[in-house]
Length: 225
Image 1: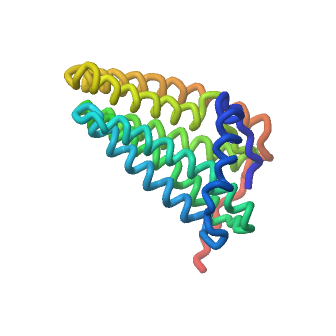
Image 2 (image 1 turned 120 degrees about the vertical axis):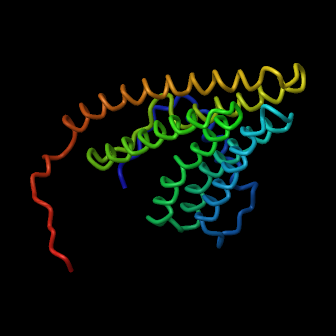
């Protein structure tokens, strides 16, 4: 596994507090960490449903916030549980990194549904998946899995706040303007995401040239077994 390096603004404050909840949850030692990953993924799915309904019912934004927070809590505790019970497995690590970007896709689809623009959802998913692929390829080439200053934790915090805002607005002001707010939020995410992807791509090319091993000049082995 690549060395994990986080430049996150929020993780140093939020991460230890969430991990401190682990003893109070009394998770059975025999329970597999992969089960926690599954629970987190189900929370992510609930979050996506919440975002989809957030512009029409008061509980939609609240469900979205709960789903995003539950996903992040599970993401913090799966590794803690694996280390505490001696169940660290490469397969669990693979599942964790595989499901993370899919969770974000649920939320982007939900926001796109809420504003009636599935094309926005497609654009957001493309940006998210491109960012995930870039992060993992760079990690393989330089041996460092790096999270930026505004990384997954910051994005999840923003999404939680957006869900709570939608519920509060719906209760206090009604739902008339919420589809418009979701519309411009989606546009903002697309613009910021596209710019961020371009910047990260340029930086990643420079990093792999500076820190990566010698380029692989070998030919493909096309021998069939």
